[in-house]
Amino acid sequence: EEPVKVGICIYQFNDNFMTLYREELQKYLEETYGAEVTVVDGKNDQNTQTDQVNSFIAEGVDVLIVNLVQATAASAVTALAQEAGIPIVYINREPSEEDMAAWEGMICYVGADARQSGSMQGQIVYELPDHGDINGNGTVDYVMIQGDMENVDAQYRTEYSIKYLTDNGVEVNKLFEQRGDWMQENGQQLAATALAQFGTEIDVIFCNNDAMALGAYQAITEAGRKMNEDIYLLGVDALDEAVDLIEKGEMTGTVLNDHIGQSHKAADVAIQVANGEPLDAYYWVDYQMITGE
Ligand code: GAL
Image (cartoon, rainbow, N blue to C red):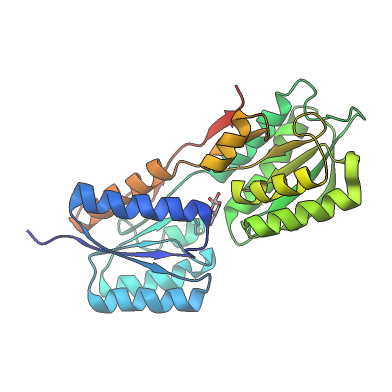
């Protein structure tokens, strides 16, 4: 039997979480299914990625796994694949519901519900003895460091972390909110700016992911602040470095973004559709709270 040919498009290789994800995805496809796998770097440019999709189609891959650069490009990318009769498993950047309905049984989205990760960040803060008001002035004064707002992960984590607190009657006050596009350097810079501007007014720094939280951690340390004594810090992904900090009491919490569960599900359904079995529209993988306890 011929091996299944899988073309994988990643939005950019320079991303901590997506690096863990793509390495596991490739390894699992090769080891579990003996698939012939090619992985390409979209370099955070949708035109580059669309060219890569066209090359995979021209090579005649059996199935595509696509982590879009821009979620709004889904309809164009689906149209290209549909013309060639090649199914697509979308991962990590969720297209609109309308786009997901465009080619039933032949396209799907595998991911995690970003609302859940936001709510879990809020819940971790709510469950602290002071509900996040570490300076005791009566409100949770927070800084929000965001991913790229193209991605629903950034939109929902920003919204639902705070919503959890306000739904539970906690008063909040946004001091600072800016996008850091998931990158550690940006997290450090933005946190340093916020700390210089607002100092001890800040109770909590929320980051839409751990890479930015690791950057914020450096800025917090440089500003001489004491983690979990005069400031809280939250991320998402559960990168090893973040979990290590949490274990040492040097970061407040994170949310496991299960790259193993997501990559295995994506691989399983890619092989399934390559073998002629239709796809469901959505496959969801749960997040999980990670705290010091
Ligand atoms: C998120 C993840 C971020 C980043 C982003 C890329 O799910 O939490 O760290 O990898 O995906 O789209």
